[in-house]
Length: 178
Image (cartoon, rainbow, N blue to C red; front, side, top):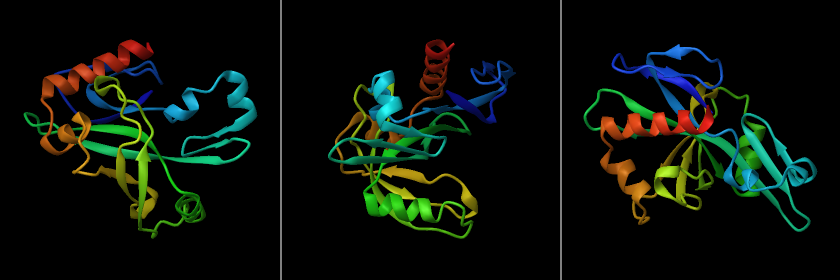
């Protein structure tokens, strides 16, 4: 559900992937978009295509397309940030462009996308409009929620959260996974 990130000597976290205890803040990552999670097991096998960076859901009348992205949350009273591994939906044109250039380390561009991960502390966070910015070096794209979209997640993104809140989110995700 998550991977390790930056140093935090005050806390230790047990990784759900490797089972090891880390003294670093893990990134809060989602293995698939919420749209895929809502499918039954049968629908996932019949309609879905999922790997670590791309997801497609092939409905009879449309194809939904998603890519894995990152978001960096400012933590006001800490010298570190909270990292998220999220999913966004893209248009067919943007998805195709990103997929065609996926292995190009010099590819940098921007897309419009919709957040497609539900972050528990905020209720429904799907359909928050975002700018998706690719990065050179083949790192996952980073998203920036639209500042004028009225949602607590967007306000916290721009205003920051407390260290206690960041650690609470990490502990909640660990509890829900492990």
